[in-house]
Image (cartoon, rainbow, N blue to C red; front, side, top):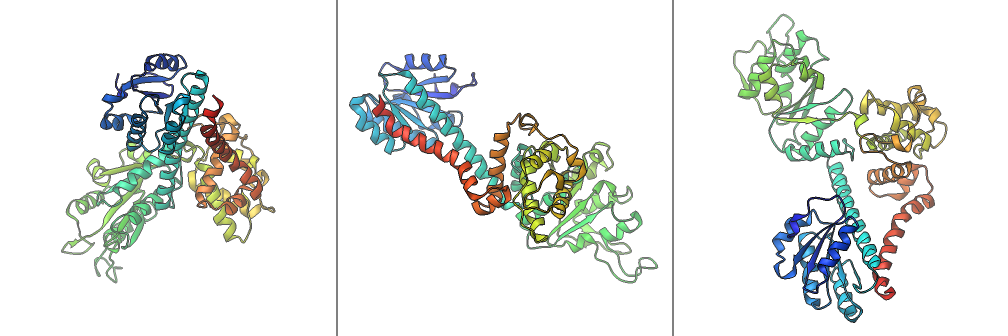
Length: 474
């Protein structure tokens, strides 16, 4: 069985690299009986390329150091070349303890004696799997921080937001048109601005035009421009938004509101990269990227010509509503609270537990925009340094508080201690690791914050102690 055959069970995935000591089959049976998914690979046949292909699906590698200390270190090197966070646990009887210690110094996660209690091995594997999964979580959080740093107006760790940010990152430097869909208040203009900032046109202008906010009879000249004398009140030339955004980005919000008679004209602009101002006789060349936004309902009801729809949406990005973003609401609320408190000249130490529960349970029909106004309202009303339930708008006060089970309907059932853990991580991420600011936002003193953070540190220290002491206990 090769290392890539781990596909059938849901338990931890273990690869045993067999040096011919005769224990691999027995160990495989024992581990499978405990719910692990196990494959065996001969050390002689272990190929770096095969291990690299399988590493992403593995939780831990187990190998024997009994008769081949150099071979065990080779396995450690190959595993870490494939994936630096892939833990390797060594089977090392007492007579080769020194070789096992050398292997740990070379990067092995732990070593245990294969001739004593199998529970010791299972404990070591449990620690290794926990270490592996923590590494994956840290990697995911690191990616989140990096994406958030590049797009500061778009905070979120939920799957939908992370997927949007990944695609946004890849297409920002493109010239392709982008159509952003999402409910009102989800932040479609923020996406457009992030595309502009992250692309080659960042030094150029960003021009936003709402197709629904301008009377239809004026929209043509606002978008395409006009020449003096085109009609009685045209007393001067007007560039229009398309030319005002020259060298930059034009954001057309509510593009579905574009009158039917103007849609063919915009389609020609996108095809030919030229515009004919109202009253002009010659077209003018354009140098602009067009990003547009529409509601999902407008797209579904085909308010846009089909050919224009596809021209506007070479790339399509969908913004999830806030009610589907789980604990993102806490990250956003913390950021908004800091901004509004500073603007109001107030000191805020975050939201009380009861207020946090209301934020999590409310459905947010107005999305991020509604959250922002609610936080601003709370800052205006509060008399203390922490936002309490009574500071929130009545619609939130009358919402039943979220229990642990209701904290995040999208990400699964979360107990309150998990919500607290994620909230603390979110705030620390927002303040770039500044524990003093994090404590202030969270409403903790720094001693409490360090105590809560210390739980993870204590676990890490305990694991390190077990790694060093485990062989001596055998």
